[in-house]
Image 1 (cartoon, rainbow, N blue to C red):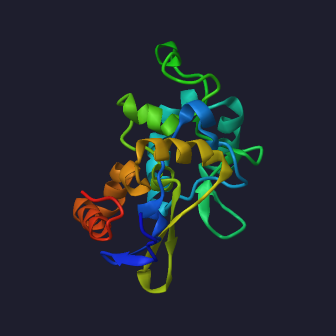
Image 2 (cartoon, rainbow, N blue to C red):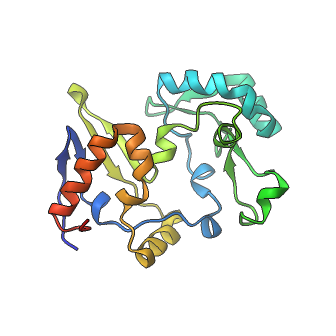
Length: 207
C-alpha cells in the first residue's frame, strides 16, 4: 500500500484515503449508528427533497409517531447551523426516517436493535422509487462543493465505524470498492472505471 495524496479524477478531487482505507459496514457491531448519531440530519439537495416528499406516503407507516410529528411540524428537511439542507431529526438525534420495527421475516437476518431507513425499505418493497439521499448511500465518503462547481470527496473517520474498518482490513476491501454502487449512482460508470484505473496505476489495489 502506498501513500496517496489528493488527486483529481474526472473533474472530481479525491482524498487519497478513499483508495487506501479498508472499509466494510458491520451492522452486527454498529446497529446502523450513523442514522442516529450526530447533531444534524443527512445532507440533501433540493431535488432530493422533492423525491423524499413524493415517497413520504410509502415510508410513513414505518416512521415513529415522534418522527411523523416532526415532519408535520417542519417538513422532511431543514437548514442546519452551517446553512446546509439536511433531513429532519427527532429530539436532536435520530433521522426521522430511522425505524426499528422491521417485518418478522427480517428479524433473523438483522442484529437486535439495528435501525433501518424507512425510505430505503419502502423503495425495496416496490412502494416508491427513491432509495435514500446520496449522502447516506456514500457514507463514510462526504461530498464537498467548492466555488466554480468543483466537487471534492473526503473520507469521514468516526469512532462508530471502528468495526467497519476492522472488517474491511480482514476482507482487504478498499473503501472505493465497498461503495462501488453509490459512487456509480452519483458520478456514473465511466467515472468509476476511471477511478479504478487510477487506483490500479498507483498500485493501491491492482485490478
